[in-house]
Length: 80
Image 1: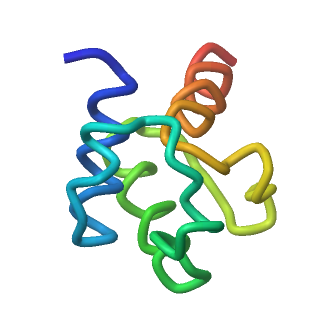
Image 2 (image 1 turned 90 degrees about the vertical axis):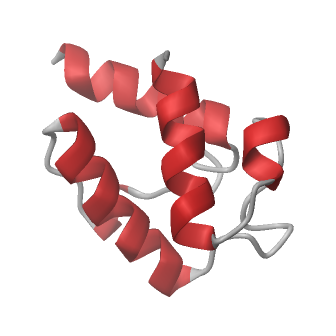
Image 3 (image 1 turned 45 degrees about the vertical axis):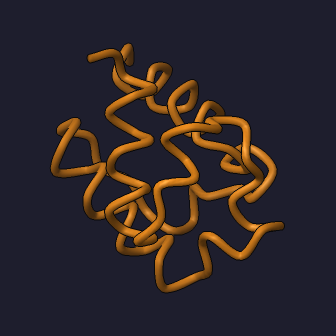
């Protein structure tokens, strides 16, 4: 399972929707899949899963607009 798939599965679990599994370009905030509370929960889950510290201050809704963009962001963070 690649990083993008893992991210999509975590988002699906946090947001309680499978739409992100089939469409990793779905706009999470525009479609109401994530809100501020779900974003904090997502940050905690991603931090646990990938061993990186993430804070709400890092979340730019455009950078985090889709599951694929979140995966790209995490790839960069993990590589640091």
